[in-house]
Length: 141
Image (cartoon, rainbow, N blue to C red; front, side, top):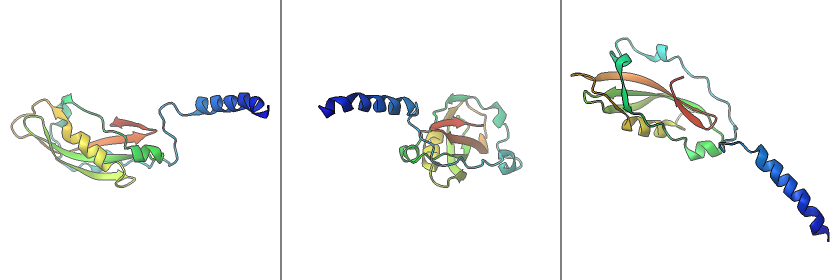
């Protein structure tokens, strides 16, 4: 008899818990680290002509599952070269916070990016800011 009385209470609690759950499955457990100034990181002469870059394929990095489960947020500053044919090369992470959490995801995505051909010499030392915040990924600020 007591079980029948408990079922409506349990169902009500279940509905409340499901209704309060975050929609994208992300639970914030860590603060967002302060991002750097990209202008200050950019060296003179870097990525000359980069303002004319036109993306053909710009896949967003994946939010790492372990970081999502841990409620981690952060950012990556990736450096890359763009070859004359528009492919990326020499992709590396120059800064990130928290260090090492999002680096692999960012590099994997940036290596796949493709741009319209950029001329005979290509572009060198281009920086891109990748934001991992509240379970979502954005490029730039």
